[in-house]
Amino acid sequence: MPEALVVVDVQRDFCPGGTLAVPGGDAIVPAVNRLLASAHLAVLTQDWHPADHMSFHTAHRGAVPFDTIATDHGAQTLWPVHCVGGTPGADFHPLLATHHAALVLRKGLRRDVDSYSAFLENDRATTTGLDGYLRARGIDAVAVVGLALDVCVSRTALDAAALGYRVRIVESACRAIDRAGSLATARAALAAAGVVLEH
Ligand code: VGL
Ligand code: ZN
Image (cartoon, rainbow, N blue to C red; front, side, top):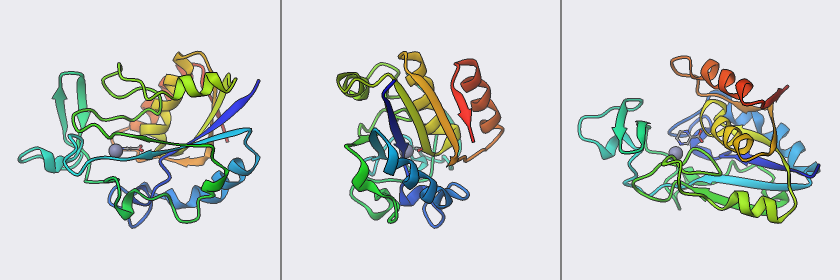
């Protein structure tokens, strides 16, 4: 039964005014804080990239944001420069109640691989260690919230389900980027994986 709360990427760059702003991204902070205050165990993730990260359009000559490129581990969307480790854009939203969290997990540090999921990098082979941490803490269920619902939140929830956790997403504590139908695609994949979508 013990459930962990995984709060994904509630950072300045994903909020209005940031470089990869998710519409309404800052509006989830009160709901996320309520969940944090009552969580059995809370983990915060932080997207945390080097300045020359391969997911940035600026790392590819002639590319523009939201282009897709092929890599040796599959297709990769190119994003505006965001969440460069150690810069203000990578900071948590200033009102996020970070003091409730036992663990802050940074992801996306390796230049040549992106990491949407809090569990597995986008090469689908490199673990972040979160599964081991949660198992060692006796966790068998996770609630996932944060930004963005159609990218890092959904990828984290899908990996958690594949790893055998019972998984729910609290949608009122999420917002999506939703480009080119990405939210509908994510919802279908989540439903197929047995992830519960709650309001
Ligand atoms: C995310 C795009 C690039 C996210 C992170 O947190 O959803 N999206 N990096
Ligand atoms: Zn990123």
